[in-house]
Image (tube, rainbow, N blue to C red; front, side):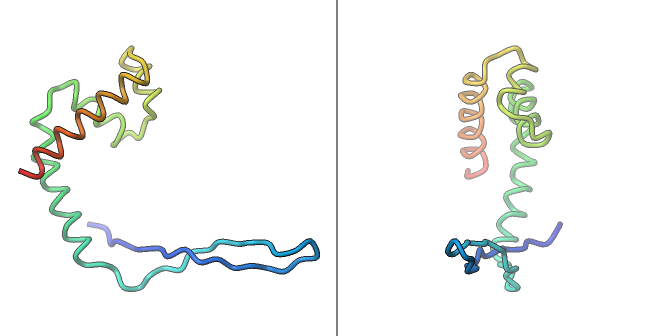
Length: 103
């Protein structure tokens, strides 16, 4: 498992002749949240158990969106359906996964 690193946004303003220019940068939070890491690991394990309980079509959609990181539009083109249908199916699948994982 990789380590979890939290980033806390900070803002810096630099004065220029035209006024102040905002710069955003990130400071790494050294105190990594152990509880969050454990919860994530448990959820990943539960997800591994839950995924095979989905239909082949549902698994294909989950893999395309979350593992291959395709857009809903790209998934729609691959499956021959519209982006809005992909969006609706994704919402149903996520609700189903949530129910499986939480029970």
